[in-house]
Image 1 (spheres, rainbow, N blue to C red):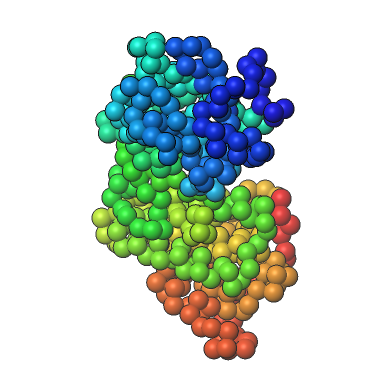
Image 2 (cartoon, rainbow, N blue to C red; image 1 turned 60 degrees about the horizontal axis):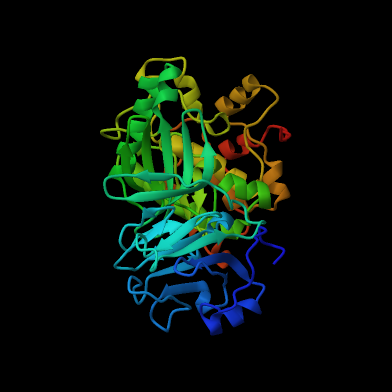
Length: 462
């Protein structure tokens, strides 16, 4: 009892459902407490909801099979249920508690009626009502959570499109003009990530046209593609103040967070991940889309440890494979040399194409295997020079005992001349990804360009 917020109410003299309450009182696994008051007599009862009753799903209604039996003509046989989420590995999402209405006469939360068969997230201090409007039939429930919950007093934030109602749980990330929220689509109970663009902030910064075009491009690209290796865009809606992009929620966070927490990924375990990313690049490039910002922060991990590419704000859709791109964009540590050269030149000879994604993925594979960045230096000028000459240190890979085949693939992806750089399709057929251990040659010779890439001294991680 000490784990809950204080209350002046006493234990019930007549439990709502004798068997469930007896079991709940013997369990320390309580995830929610309801203070129930029948308005006809004003007598409060305490109902402790635990995970070990009916798999943590508590049904409220007139039928005797319900965990909490309610009496009254306005109570449905199965009026509503309360349960704790089990559908996500995210810790905050796991603590999310839902109320799902199944009634014909309605369930009200804070005097607002839920849509029929609708869901709502419960927060500490919420008031649930059934039989509203007729005092003798009305029953109220006050919601209380253990005080050690992460968000017991969070105010409800509801986002509504024409078809859906989303209830916000927490903030996943913030940027200059946008914030990403974790939310629940209330008709299905599915988690989603919503990128919210603040129009006023955009106007105040004087960047409205440029950033709006970037978001418009991202929306158009996301809505045009469907691939298991790309985070799906579910819908887009807006109001006077905000533009909302509703996306698939990927539970495991991004690859950079994983690498920072766990270090490098074992070489054998990396192979299926690299195959997934290459297959996704093949799909994107075949559909005329160059991502232009492949990096660990833009690769998300599912609960099954599959990888999905996200954040298409810098992506560019081109009409054909002969089209060159000229915009200087991306993240320095993963920028291809032709992108750096394009910053200072206007001719097509110095522009670039989808091969920039292969370079960036080569950098990402290096990071996965060694937990260090291939092109880093004390100054930006030095880092640019390393990229333009394709010099990356071999020692971090050798220290991790990375095979010659893996090093050979990385080196071919990090060729300075994009014409000599391996394509994503060729990379997928590279011996490192195709041959099993017993099939590999014992010590393949690296070509002269590969050896040249390893001539620099190790660069200390900053």
